Every structure is written in structure tokens, then in C-alpha cells.
Image (cartoon, rainbow, N blue to C red):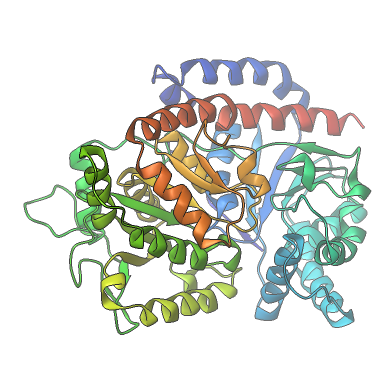
Length: 489
């Protein structure tokens, strides 16, 4: 069990100084003035499985520091284990909840899960006091939290960020395995009503994930700052002096021989010049990287005869567009051992492509040694994109789509339940019904790229939707209300 230090960066006054955020901040402060006094004397513990990589680790720093400013004592702890098989098991459970994988969890899996849960519960127990509120995020620390709830006079809430709207044998296996632990909690929180299992009905609340609009990943970037980030990360060649120094670890690009090398080799990506279609996610089979790559290639191959100026422009756009597939250095994420394997499979598929197809697809491994640098790189890549894709086969929510929507970048998403919570097809972006169908991906992408005015409209609508529904301020208000209810039971 490791405590994560959260340094204060921005205050609520900093957010309120932006005209488009001032009202949202005031609404949160008004809610806090009523509810925080009822929570005095109680500490809140956020517990998850990693301090970097993935949406939970992205959201927690802002939540912790803003809740502290509102008057609560909030801490963040990460479970640990020296048994790599534990994280392979929890990744398997993660996939089962998404409806994928072999629905088998035997006595050996139970013994491993319970043993690691016991170890982490014992470590966290030393830090807890009576009346504390413990918020456990996702299946990895679920067992540790249930042990503590049984043994201590605390309140415990399980925040599950994943789920499937169509239960099957795999999901039933996962919920059967987790149910003895999940039922112990005072309350559960999910990202969509469809995710709530029957045995938690009536004891669960929906709280959507949310973004921090001033985080390094979401703040506005002036042109010189944007260019500086691309040069610092070695995603663009430095043709003139830039203000900031190069990042210690640059982004790396998959080369024709299967190795990762400089991102500007064999040529510049063209982030500032070409139309760019981008997907940024963990290296996970459920993120749909492979069918997206195939769909993009089919989109490139569909070349109608030029008949007018608009069609000629679209033909030129299709000729020079590039697909960027980016994800974290998989070795840096402890709780996702599948990432290395998935990236190897993607690299193998890339090496099979003809050289002319390889030139149109860029696979990037993004450094994770600095959370700030990684976030700035993602921000810059999204802002350089004409379309941001999230082609997930399953998606708990999909903050990568939310981030792009906030930036006013049009999105192309799958119909996975978490993405349906955000994107209205033809209003806030476009949606494919089958993320495994390359032909549908190609057709929808082609339709989007032919309509520059529609791209602008979808981007504007998407930004407004995030402002109204998926900002950190509204999310914290919902948490305050929930904690106030839970302590009264």
C-alpha cells in the first residue's frame, strides 16, 4: 500500500478566473457550503491500483486537491503486490466484466485474490480511523476494502468504472466472483445505469467521470506552446529555437523493422500540416486498435473520380491524411500486463503492411516517466487532430473522448455503453454500431471527412455537452451529496 502525494497546483479561484468556468465553480462552492459541515471529523480515502495510466489516475489528483480546498481531509492510496499473477488475474476480471475472456475463476484465483486483499487491507488498516469514508476504485482493491468494512467502524463505497450493458456468461462469472466482497459495501457507484448488477440494485448511484478543464491534458495551448510540446517530445523537428527544453524521454515511433525509434523518422508525422485522425488509449484489445487500423486503410483505398472542386478537395484530403495510434509505454503500467502483448500484436500487423500503407499509419509509444509531460503530449496530439477516434469494443466511459470533445475536436466513437453516455450520433460527433467492422469504420470516417462544416458543428456541440455534463465541478457536487447520505444510514 503506497500513499500518493498530491501537490496543490490550482485553486478554485484559478478556475473561477476563466469566464467560461466561473458559474460552475460558484455552483460547487454553494453546494459545499451546505454539505461539507456535515462531513466534518471524517476523512475520505481514495484507493485504486495505480498512480499513473488510465482514467482513474487521471481524475484523482484534481478531485483530491479541490476537495481539500473545500474543507475535507482527503488522501489517496494505491494497492501494491509483489505477485505479478495478481494483476494478471484482475486484468482477466476486468475483461470478464466487459464480457470478454474465458468465464473461469477457480479456487486458486480466489486464494490469490483474497491473499493480496488481506495484505493490502492490513497495510491500510494502520492509516484508518473510525468514521473514515473509504472509496475503493474498481475490482483490484475491492477485496481489501470489504475486509476493512467488515472489521472497522468506517463507511465504504465501491466506485466501479467499468461494466457491460448486455450481461453474458463472462460478466456473470466476474460478478459471481466479486459479489461476496461488493455486497459488504455501504453503497456502490457506476458510470451508467446499465452497468449496475442486479444484486446491487437500490444500493447504487450513477456518477459520470469528468475532466479537469485546466489540467495539463485539457488546458488551452497557444500556437507557440503547442509547437514547443511537439518539439520537446520529438514529435516534430525543431526548425527554430523553442523556449522549453526537450523532455527527458521522447515519444517513440514504430519503424518498418518493428523497433521503436525517433518519431520524426522515416519522415515527419505532419501533425501541423496534414489531416490527422488519432486514437489515444491503453494498449488493450477492447480499445479496437486493430479494426480501426484496417478501417482506416480501407478509407484510404476508396478513391472516387474527381467530379467537382469539393470532391477534388476530399480526394486530396484522403491522400494525405494519416492515422496516429498512441498509447502509454506499456512497461510503465503495473496493473495492465496485457498491454505489452497487445502492442506486440499491433506491431506485427503493422510490419505486414506494404510500405505505402506504413507511411500513412503512425504508432506511438508515449513516455510515462512524467505525468505532466505525458498529459501535454496527449493534449497536443488531440489538438492537432481533425478527428479523434475511440473505437472501443467495450468502454466503461471513455475520458479520451471527453477530452477531445472539450477541445472542440470532432469525435468518432463506437456504440459502447460508456461512449453512448456522452456522444449523440450526428449531434456531438459520429458513431459506428460495430467497432469490429472495418467497412463501417471506413464509411463513417469518409462521410465525416467530406463535411468540414459538419465537423465544426459537431465539435461545438461536443464542447457544450462536456461543459454541461462532464466537468469536475458537477462531479464533486454529486460526491458530496452521496457521502452525506451514506453517513446518515
